[in-house]
Length: 88
Image (cartoon, rainbow, N blue to C red; front, side, top):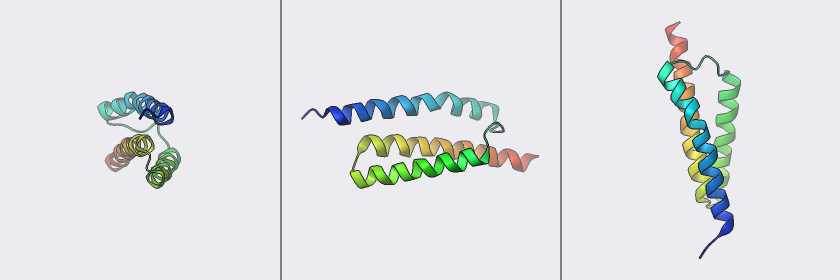
């Protein structure tokens, strides 16, 4: 059965997650996350984690997929930032 709400949620999830990819690729290629503040990394990751939990509670594939993937990308940026701190 066609569910317009899930379709809209899926489109939103794909667009917001894909829009984050260029920043992740740039951070990965330069090896630097200096421009990201730790407050942003921690705050954004925490929000994504809560959205992920919410999506799991609702059994919403778009919420779980998008927030799980984006959380992974933010944690990757956090790792690059942490790794860069160790090099200084």
